[in-house]
Each structure stands twice: as C-alpha cells, then as structure tokens.
Length: 128
Image (cartoon, rainbow, N blue to C red):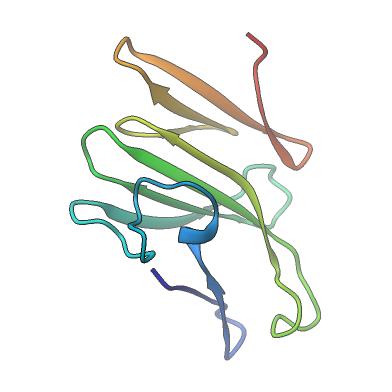
C-alpha cells in the first residue's frame, strides 16, 4: 500500500507507508490492503494549536478497525526531513469514534472501549 500525502502549497508529496507502522490486520504480507477493507483519511486538530494531525483509518466494516494518527511539524525542506511523526496506532472492533480530543476504540463483545485522549502532544489512556 503506497500512500502519498500531498501538500497544497508544495509541488511535492511525502510517502507514508502504513503497512510498516507495526502489526496490522488491514494489510497482507505484501503491504496491500486486504479484500473487504476500506481506507479513510482526514485531518483534525486534536490540540487546537492550528496545525492539523493526519488521521488514517482502515477497517472491514464489521469487526476490525485500525487507526493511525500522525502529527506534522513544519520543516524547511520536506524532501530531506520527514515532517510526520506517528502519535498513535491502535486496533479495535467496529467503528472508532472521535469525541472532542478523544478517540474511543471499542474492543470485546460487551460494548467496552478504550479512550485515547490527546494531552500535551501525546495520546494517553486512563489507568485501570
């Protein structure tokens, strides 16, 4: 799976390889999106600092969902320095929901979910 992030103000893009961000049910051994999976991308400013974070989700619309969040740093030359930093990579079931500064990631079959809250440039979960 090859993803290219294109900057509107630049004449170039930055490759983003989601299949190399860790274990993923969404991609096969060749890095291709598995049959039945969908991929969505959006931006959201979790910390309201004026710079959006890149949010990418993949799922099979049934029981498997994954989400990756990347922060962006303005750099002088995006051809030499990677402007993206992976902030979060999590898996869950069914639909992951955005709730303010938080991501609710369902797991199990009892309606349980883990909440990831973006605080001081990092995602935190509650202590159980």
